Length: 158
Image 1: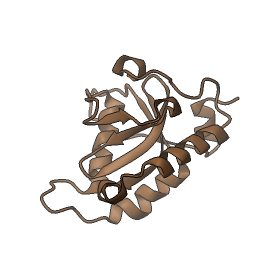
Image 2: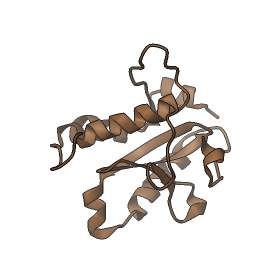
Image 3: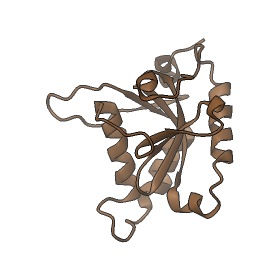
């Protein structure tokens, strides 16, 4: 079995390490699947800023990942939420324009498997393919058990 550190060292995950300001210390850990890392770098970064937005979709993701890592307070249903079925232990991190799907493997440790622009989800509101992708990716990892936090409230995951 492996830890997140082993999976990062083997290239199965990439640790997101934002540039921190002087005096800031990381309080959380974000890891990205290779697919998500490629999606962010090759697709999302080129997405133009939506009308009326101060930040591009990419910058919104960069900001929420930074906020998570430094431990900035996040509100349920505004910044994150657990998806149905609750027993799948799949969560989403939310920005105004982007949804990131993954799971909490330990308190303060989130693995992002895939993402989507919110406007693409709004059309059919079908989260099932993203939930299935997270479950399959998590199952394929040789991660120490338990692979996911099963709790549902803020204190379980942060």
